[in-house]
Amino acid sequence: MGKGIRKKKKAKLDSLIETCEEHCISILVSLAKYCRGIQLDRFIYKFKENNQEKCERLLEYMNYYYKKFEKNYKEKIEDDEIIIEQEQDEESKYLEKINSGLFNIQNVSLIIYFLQSLNDDHIKEKLRNLMILNNVDSNEIKETVKDMYFHIGEEIEKTDSPSTKIFIENLLKNID
Image (cartoon, rainbow, N blue to C red; front, side):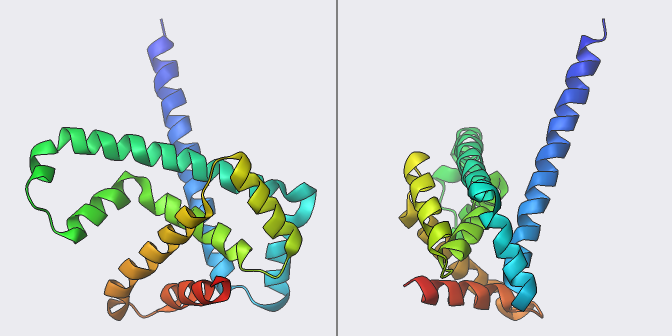
């Protein structure tokens, strides 16, 4: 008795932890976008300390969210096969991907891409080695960031702050 309640509590706790992690990643993206000067140096230093363990964690998140996205998107495709077989416009397909977890992949990719754009050889080298170790393709990260940039462009006129688009544009210029 009581095992069902424990499973529900565990599932709720896991969901809460995952939500907190997603919020933390969104906060990291905001810090990368808006920090300047000493605050930016402190932010970057966090990725250098303890043998760049936060870089390792980012790539763990990348793998986790990518596997979760593939699973969720595959399930949605199987569940909604009839709808997907009919012609959907690109926006609907993109929204399906976002709802399946693409947003988290984009945020982690954006942070990784930001770190790669820095003039810090230690972080770049660590990220390169970790990507090889975790089978993460740097071109895939770049394509994810470019895709995010492309889709932000359609909505930018509707918002007050074009900062995300400008931030991504600057990142793409810095690395290319």
